[in-house]
Length: 230
Image (cartoon, rainbow, N blue to C red; front, side):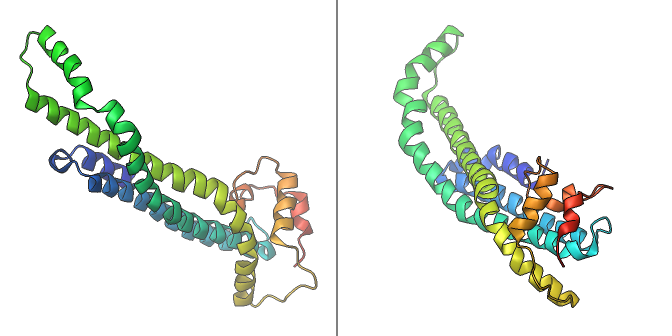
């Protein structure tokens, strides 16, 4: 279990949640979840780029492109996570308050059934305890929806839909920077990042993740990968 998940669990069950039960609590939990996932992306990007640049199983002349694609993916993952995740929690709060709270946590609608349940158990209905319990559950539900919306927005929409659209074109620029730093000579005609990805995917049709170095880490490289011009 990641540190971010532990923090969200602790916050959701803390005395602070029961006392405050305010929108800021849901927002704080969403922010913790977002910070956890983006910090993981930052660390992973550093690891993958470093691994690609030093992976001896990948031909030396191809490492710059693989590392550049990893870097492009990492940067876009962080950007889209904040660009979508931060406003998403606000949208989820409004959705909960306008559509869910009154239908699922309305005291007037739930009081009669709660009173009947308590009296059947042979106990006396306590209005104060009823409102406290309802408020606590409403707060937890609100927090859960905000966290869920934030993670879906940043990790599914951002990482799986938006990132691939921009990461591959960005790889061209980063590859040139890496090669310039290494002092590599510029080829007469260099394949575009889209062409390189297409060549790798033609040998590996199940390659759905943009992190190519994971697929190239095996002992056998695809034959078409040797067609890259350097």
